[in-house]
Length: 101
Image (cartoon, rainbow, N blue to C red; front, side):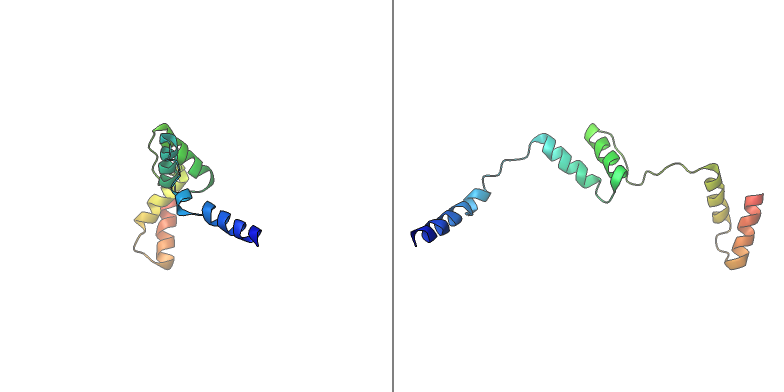
C-alpha cells in the first residue's frame, strides 16, 4: 500500500504543470532554423533542403523557382499559347504548324 501511494505521489509530482514551465527558450540559431523550416514548408526532398539551407545562409529562394526551360519546351509553350482558345483538332493543327514553323 505504501508503494502505491509513493508511486502515485511521484507520478503527480513529475507530471505537474510546473515541469512544463521549465522549458528553456530557443537559442537564436534554433529560432532561425524553425523560421527557415517553416518557409520551406510544402517542398520535399532536395528542394526542401536547398530552400532551408539558402534561408539559413541569408539568401532568398522563392518556392516557385524552377529549372530553366529547354529551347524545345520554350517553343512548345509559345506555340501552345498561340493556339489558345482553339479546341480539339483545330488546336492540334495550329500547334503542330507552329512547331514545324
